[in-house]
Image 1 (cartoon, each protein chain N blue to C red):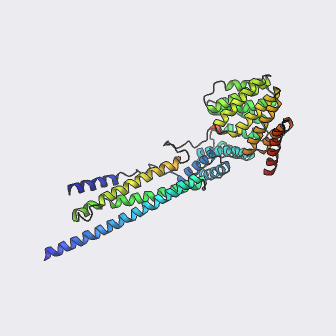
Image 2: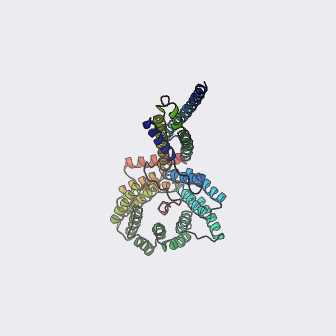
Image 3: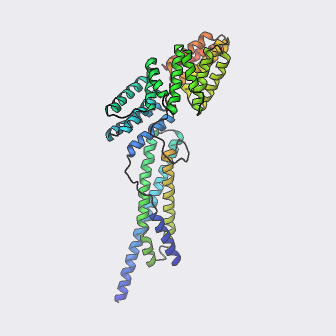
Length: 141
Length: 290
């Protein structure tokens, strides 16, 4: 009897954990989707020239901040997965792959945005920031 | 089961591989405003660059960051020169210079060049020349630009030895911009030395180099030198055409004073009816813009 109740409690706790984790996954997948939509809108704005330079930069910074939040959510949720999986292996069979994909997407988006923020006008891959002072060759006589 | 644990372990490992926080906090607002100023200038939006550099300068003042105040004062002045506001540029460099000097900081050569250019463009060529001479004594790209400035001033004064010296200072260009500067001064020198054909060829080469460097203010100036060379060589139709192109380029660039000057020259020289019509159309359009 006691053994049965313990098993029931353990199962209930495991199910709660799974539900919580799935809710976390759903939340940050939503976050990723929103970020991807923002990136799409940003690239469109850059292409059509509808937004001015500082406005675009501010939007990139904002999207990057959101994305970093999503990445942190993923990192927080992931360590709990092995513990849950040990209890209910079948229920979480697809969870690791989903988490990996979500995290990979977040990292790729973050890398893309970092590149966009610095060099979206040039389309280059240079990593070092340009010097603060303009070149004297740009002083127009 | 083992496979699942291994997979989860990989996910956990990946989760820990996030970006490291920077060692020191960065002023992202300052960096963003500075970067936006540069990007706006590169996008030929000098008015927008002025706004962004003003914000960045204000931020540098909030930080009480003297090197940044010097750099941003210079950047703002360059943007004001690009926006054809040399008086504003002069006011900016003077205010910044006063602060640098008051606080015992050295003034860098690029800064002197910006002030010399602002002086030249506000009608103080003697002061501009004296300051540019100081910049010429320094090593680096500012010295090369100072040579161009001194060459332009010497040419306007009819000072042939001065123009020759400035041209000689650019004898070994190391960049395309310096090559264009050297070609322009060589063209002006050849014109002074009664070699209009050589002058025209060098001026047209300079215009091509300026065009490749997206320096359209320089394109218009080089075309005007080519026009003067064509006139000196007796090719009035060619001169009218070149003055029209110089005036049109200047007008499109927003330089109304030079545009009017060169379009009037084109008008005075043009005899071909089609060319005359083109000049009149451009003058009408220029009048409508002002």
